[in-house]
Image (cartoon, rainbow, N blue to C red; front, side, top):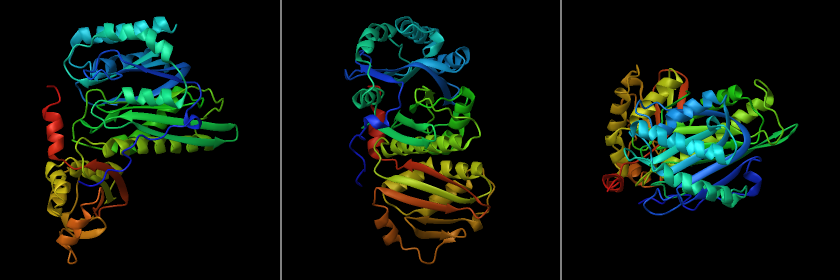
Length: 413
């Protein structure tokens, strides 16, 4: 097995944490393991932007979260996340359970229920024991704090099959002072996000900038399109996928749409999203190789992403990389069935920087042994030039191993 980098939890420092947020995590008794499974983030008043799964089977917290963002005018006071139960395919009782938790949090923290944003992750089809979460709210209140340890506990409590916390941060220097951005995420399987405005991959990004909901949404959407929507572990889009961006305004620095500061802020949000997206794939269930797909020469970004996604989700491609088998024909075949108009005679492929296919045929210098050896590394770059235009896309995926099958064959039992 190739060596996985970054196996230790990322360090979180006080300087990285945006002002205006407090975090807590407790054991509510949802996870069979008994580990912390209920996490909350609190703020006096934050503007919010979100993107949710495009799966037509959606979990109760996605339904309620969408409703609350509209009804609350894009303002969030409390973020509440439970792990161990997705609260999906639970019908009206599931919606009622989700709303009961939101109502209890709203009462405890003196805000409107519409200012509570819910999320869930875990097994589908099991009723959510809302009473356990409600009973844990007083302990949440006691545990709230703004230290690196509080944020780390929040990030840890939202995990399911993940092996480690995902964390990323950035600071934007502005004439009015610094703006801090920090994000956490969970996800190791059931990952092929296709997020649309209106986990399992869950990502929560916090900033102390002062930003309107509309500007925040305009910042989040392109960042997600180029990062979270460009990863895949197993090709399954979850019922609970959510990316939420909260802005507390505690720095006092206003982000005005169209300004130079807004451009820098957008770049920093993109940076945080990109890091979290890669960390999710690096923690892919059973993964032994990280594949970094660079699709170039496309007629559009959409075409490049479609080709990359088809390659990334091909079981034949993924198993070839699990065995370090330089079977480049599988990559070419996947590109050809992506639905994108292309000419196979113009397509060239390289693996680990070595040409394997040129203009739709085997490259003259292709050395199966050299490529096989290079594929034993943890990170394997794969370049696919379509020869059709100037657009490109970078897409992260991983191999498909027997360990992945084992994890998911036993998930509910």
